Length: 214
Length: 195
Figure 1: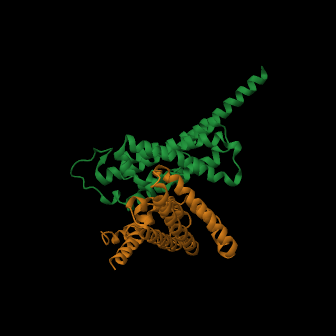
Figure 2: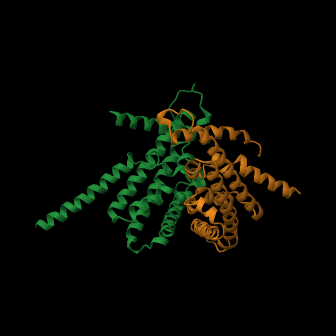
Figure 3: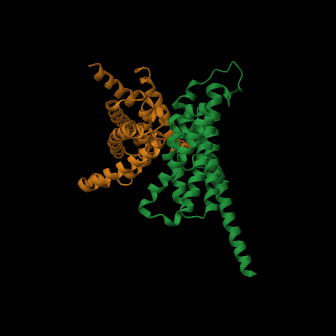
């Protein structure tokens, strides 16, 4: 009886830990804003909200599936072949995601172009495989994958929202700013991506600094 | 002769006009991570150039002579990343054996090139643009040099920036990104030079 209770609390605590990790990945340790991983797609696909959202979901799919696979085979991984196995697993799932996008949302696939296959070398996914999935049971790993994926999605959508509204006066293709608004073309260009992300980081650092001081 | 001019155009287009870092957002991680000191940035740039030229050549051969004729185009990504990973491994072994000093200064950055999106990205873009063999080699080399230039300039600016009075919240990654944005604006002057 007592044993069962202990096992119960133990299970609960793993579940609790997994849930805590999930929430932490969403904002506190947001892969883009806090750890600065996966910069290339973050900057490249955020000129408008729709491709950014598509990219976010594709990354979520890949990180969840690769975390699942890596966690399943974590006992059989040898240290020196580890990274190669991660990369191969990830590239299989990226190929699936790419073919899926080509088949069902061809226009988005066109816009994203080579940035979908580039998910393979997205450091976020390898980082999660290495630091979480290869050490934790399946449930924790999958939840961690969802947290990371949604955290990434939130980040790119925030960035894309700012850039699309200021750069074209629209959001998700809908007009939000009045017609007299002169679009800031620079926001659609690469320079706008760098500068916007720079200032978002500054705002986050500022609010963190205040929280610490308070 | 026109062939030669075309090659120069490809080179300039990849190195300056469509610079990997500034217009394609490729290789941003090392661009932000390894750009604290000029000598390290330059070394990283050279390592990338070397691996990129070799991988562009090899992936072109594998894609066009093996995968496409066999109708295995869909395994492209897996094949490319395998080529790049083994390429990096080979270069690392070679450098460790013959250039000890260089190996020490590269440190962790050499294996990190595997996950540098500039390499895989360029190979994929070359495939997308439908370049022929010689153009692919030139594009790989030019892309590498463009990356070296971008990361070295950035490191030069950041060495100065250390002495500057940067607002607290912007310190670190923030000011680096804003600097990168302004640098990108400067490089936009090249756009329109080729097509």
